[in-house]
Length: 315
Image 1: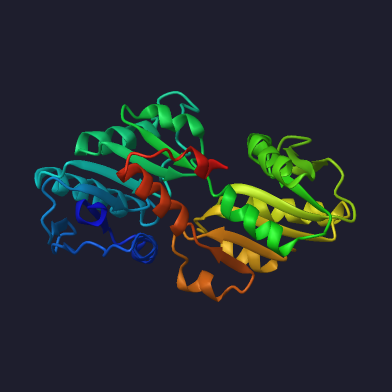
Image 2: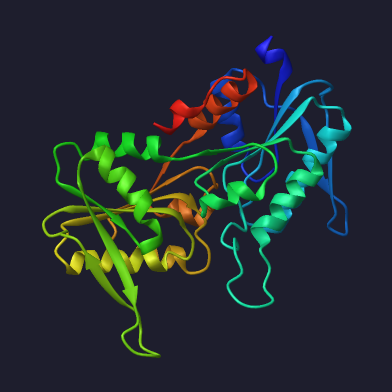
């Protein structure tokens, strides 16, 4: 009964993650055709009957951001017009999340705009992971299940840093709450990187708040984009006496000069998840370690489908 009424489809953004989720749930990935017209318009056709089914559409809004967002919206519309009973947008990485407020006059709040588009297209639930700003959940007028990669990273830390003295590091003031959650569960100390400009037009100076000397420092962040913050933080921690520095980030955006910076940075390893697929260039960088969140997302999908609580997935 469970398998018959549950259907999972994937856009082109991260088919491998969708396949792993389906493998965990022992259900086949739904068939759909995604192609482009010569002018770039996207066409999507669901090749299975979804009438009355519980549909989960897996699509991170990662680069190319606008193309993947349109795929998601068109898939939702196709499922709605095919009379799906309920449509859940599974968005492992929510693009445009950094534009969650007005930072200057006459600027948009694009994270809210994207939420409106998803709801208007026909989604009745959203499943996402490690939002850049938690308040984005409030941008939706439908239920949002916000998962954290914390259980996956905690397992890795406990397995690889057993009996070693570690310190959890927040790369900025905004990530203190996230770092505190890790430190509390690991029963270890915490440090904070404070970035500031001493004088106008001078480069940022990194101040480390907390004791990192003779410890293994693990920087925790929600995403690594151009990797500037992660790499500068790693350098500051080594200068303050940390023996080794590791980076952990849920979403490996890795745009612009990120790979070049990571290759030169004093990072022992950068541990990320598969919410966003790595580019071919990123896969060649040996210091990047990828952990899968497929089981976490798959279990959430199973519980949403059977109307069970997912609160235990937050640890």
